[in-house]
Image (tube, rainbow, N blue to C red; front, side, top):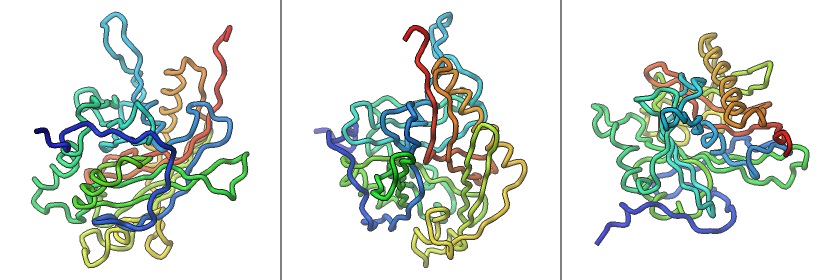
Length: 308
């Protein structure tokens, strides 16, 4: 008899459902972050938090060597292990990760390997081996897809992304009870540089990139405080965070990578799609490396191929 935790995850074919407002068994109550897509963008029929991962995963095919090539534009890109779920989509879930052998390549695991057992093992392995066992106790983050807001006009379709923090118990509960109806990302938790969680929000356009940083006022190691209050940044109350300056070096890294995202997408679509603006979230890892986390909004213009 095969343990179903070793079987690939499958989703029910149904429409988008809302994310619960209360944490369950190890998850913390979630906050909202602005997200969505400008009307008229054509990179996808409907915006999804994970849309950009599929685009960054694309690489040109090298016909001479009969293998995937590399645009060379994403060599500095690092992402945490991230799994994209979307109820009713036959091509999902997809598990994206960075290739250590080929820097700048976002790889995708085979569908047969996207199992609850493998997810729990990968998301908790490093913490079980570490001496401090993970000071925060957090192993994963859920970023729910943008939800429609009745007060939003057709000219500016923006929803609200929901963010939750999970310990190992919460992760197991999600994979066992909630995953079938979930739309969004499950992302491996990344320890920040220092004992306070900090994130950066970048608003990028063709000629400008504005980066802001928020740092939680509570220590991640202070388990007298719930996970939510120790981890929230942009999605939490102002009283739980401080605005911190962004170093010139970090600003430069993020601005360069956002520009390279646009170039990569243009190249992979044969110049038919142009990324105009993007709202994204970033983090400085404990080793000082800047990581891309997720994209909450983007707008693009597309043109038909010649003779189309």
